[in-house]
Image (cartoon, rainbow, N blue to C red; front, side):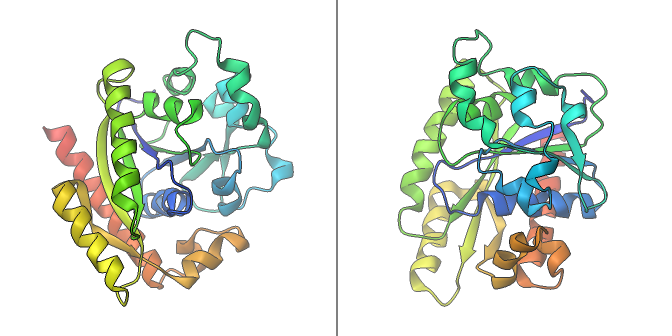
Length: 262
């Protein structure tokens, strides 16, 4: 693998927090500012693949094949409509992956080993996880340099976050000592909602600088985009959600540069 490649896993065990939306739009924003980006879809639902316009019939080589050793990353990577952005698509085959690889001694290192091949030409790899802390998510954490956590602006946000951070600590202690938190991004924010404002204040008070400055607003155009097989930035670049993801991409890159300089 190119030593300059940064692997960021987008994870939250709660569903409906904007995880896949964040993965595909952040990837698109990074590609738009000149980075060469790969999304690895590890969610059996395959929403990231659908959201980037990959028909199910065209997913002939998938993340399932990568994890079972049937294909390398570059065999599975497909170009998307976004210049500079490719994806390793997901299929429903992933539903059975735990049974297939659970007895293998390297069961949590399948993705890391695949990404460690020489000649992978991406500056960023973003891994979209399923909404659970299972073997797929552990593979994503074992392979990652850092984790990006989307957090919905709702009442139980901090409760779920503490469970995820405990898992990160366990992975750091047992599998991947270099795993860091790239940041926490607050999603689905509605400034008219007093509770949402309180959640933002609480999360910033508890997590400090780990929380990105950028907050992703609740936005109809961002919600509509996947049904057209497009990331929001292609569907409507000027909408508030797209602009927020461009800002987030800038923040991610600034943090990465600080990490590399440290």
